[in-house]
Length: 71
Image (tube, rainbow, N blue to C red; front, side, top):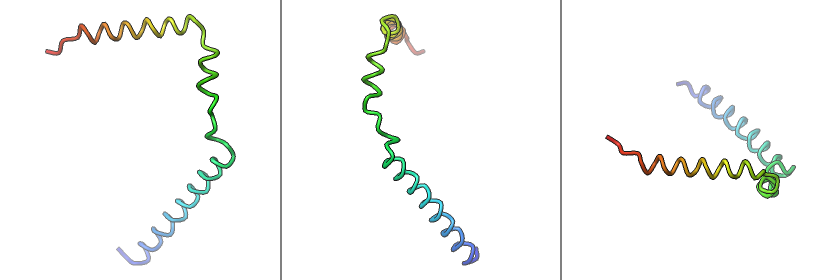
């Protein structure tokens, strides 16, 4: 490959990488990743029916795994 091609590819990759780094730092600064209450609110607003259904599905999964015998 030509030297100019390698230099151009490195320049483009550094440019795109710096844009990605800037976007990531901006997202951190603006609080895009601050969801500390997400899981707490999800638990608070879960209904009893959904929780019971999840328990039943887990029981069925364990029973299937217990009875599964590979050939």
